[in-house]
Image (cartoon, rainbow, N blue to C red; front, top):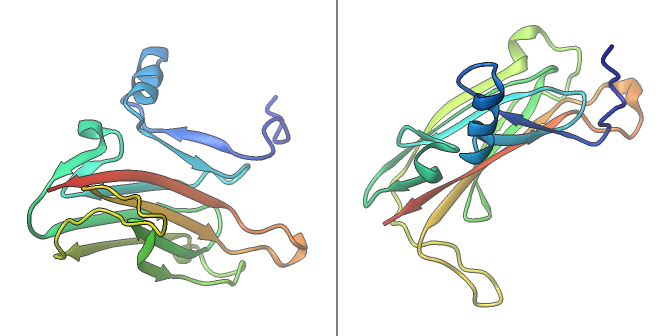
Length: 163
């Protein structure tokens, strides 16, 4: 019998082609993985120009406009989905903080366009890089009777964009 307290802090989710030992290890090796809080098994997807996390070494080559797609399916209403570019919020899709909202609020998806030049991140200490990166953060609504415990969350990425 499954014990929900067996991994109380979080889970690693992965995208495998089938339910077999080989496919699971292939997904882990290709980094087709993301993190989600326990027991919230949130499904998340992020792609840049059609390349998903774990595909093609999570790297895209682009000189011009990039298309970013995201999709999140939660176990509760989705409060927000943030697409982060080079460490800063690029886009925030807001949902609801009402835990009792209807089932239609359990999902968020979107298609974004980034036409800014690929410059890479620059940090305060002078470090940086030549490739941009995108990742996704998703947060679910908090149940009112849970006290200080926040709603479930998921983190997915990065996908790198090289010039």
